[in-house]
Length: 318
Image (spheres, one colour):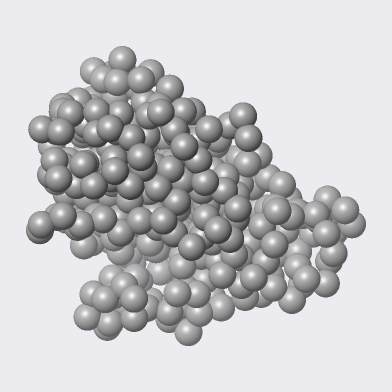
C-alpha cells in the first residue's frame, strides 16, 4: 500500500519530539545511536503524551480522544479510539505482540516496528509486512531499554540502529495508562482473529474505555488497565457480509465469554502466580461489542460493562 506504517509513525514522532516541552517528554540516544523517547519512565509525560503514544502505536491511523464516560459505567474520563483502518492500525501496528529481552531487560513491543520485523505468525495471516527507512516502536516498561536491545530490534527490522526510535512509558504513568486503555478496538479485533473471523470484513471501528487512576506501581497498573477494557470497554465495529456469522461468533467475543471473567484482573493474575500465559486467552477483550452490518443494515450487541468490578479495581468504592 502507499501507507507505510513506520513512515507515518516516524512523521508523528518528529512532530512530537519537536514539541517535547509541551508533551513533557525527554529524548535521548542509546549508545548505538537509536532515539529513546521517555514518555513516562522518568519523564512526567501526561495526557497529551499518552494520546500521542496511542496514535503512534496505531501509525496515525486512529483518532484518540479523552471524553467524559457515561455515569452508568464510570464517573470519570474515558479514552475513545476511532479508525477506518482497523486491521492495519490495531493488528499490524498497535498489538503488543513482540516479546523483547536483552540481559535482564524484558518488555512487550508494540507499534509499527512489528510490521517491519514481521516475526509474528500474525503477519502471514493478515498478509502484510513492510520495509521502512525509519522504524518506530513503543515499549510498556519501567526503564529505558539497553543499547543491545536497540541493536537487536534494528537488525530484525533491517535498519541501522540510528534509524530506530523507541518510545517508552511505564504502566503506572499517565501516558502509559492512556496508551494501554486506548486498546479497546485492538482487543476486540485480536479476539475475532483468534475466533477465526475474516478481518477483511471489518471496515471501521470505534471503542471507549474508562481511564483508571494511575496506580502506585506497575503491577497494580496492569490490573487497572486490563480491568478498564475487560469490564468497561465498549467497541462498535462496522462490518460487511452475512448476519448468521455475526450471531454465532458475537457471543464469544466479549470478555464475559471467558471462565476467568468476573474478578478484578489483579486477583486473577495472582491466582495464576502472575503468569500471563495461564490466564484464559479469551478473557482479553472488551466488556461489550456491537456489530453494525453494512450489507444487511442489522445490528447485534453482546456483553455488558461491569461497573462494580471497575469500582473495586480502581479503588473508588462509594
